[in-house]
Amino acid sequence: MKHTMIVMMGGQGAGKGSVANIMKTEHEYKHIESGALFRALPADSEIAQIMARGELVPDSELFKLMESEIDPNADIILDGFPRTLPQAQWLVEKYADQFDIHVLYLDLSEELMLFRINKRIREGGGRSDDADHAAVRRRLDTFWKVTVPAIEWLKTAPGIKFSDIDASQDLDGNMAQIHAVL
Ligand code: ADP
Image 1 (cartoon, rainbow, N blue to C red):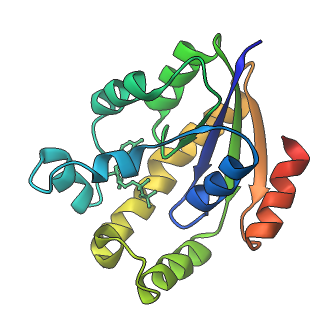
Image 2: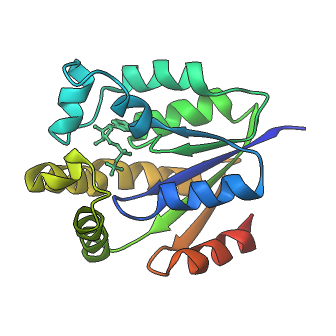
């Protein structure tokens, strides 16, 4: 039997990490969070500087990271990858034979994304790249311009299960929708 690969897609503040953390309490998943893995790198590294500007890390770096993290013998949640069309195509080409891939798109308006990022800052749990307004603007623009086409492509990619989740609800509401499609 193939293992499961849950792919969390959604903009900043859509709740990918929160949903992934709850799903891990319900089933044994290996949670692979590209942003967190990159944040563990030294602050003077080139990747840390790219992140601080709110830009995307080059695809080649993501492919290296994913190859070392994706374990074909585990159920997996991907959080933060893919977020470009080449990344999405690479993932499907390389892993659709080994995993049942299910994309959960946490769909949220930009207005609510900004509201949640600001709340994250106010409540003190914010990250340094959340506090820089220009960097946040750049990440949101990249989401609409670069990641949404990848989401659109995944929607119709053969053999891939895709579910649209209305992420404007609270966490319980989001989880109820996810339980209904899993
Ligand atoms: P957010 O989704 O709020 O932007 P993440 O923690 O997922 O936060 O990512 C933080 C940063 O890490 C991104 O702004 C980007 O620089 C880098 N990064 C993470 N995942 C990817 C990816 N799949 N492709 C390119 N860059 C990435």
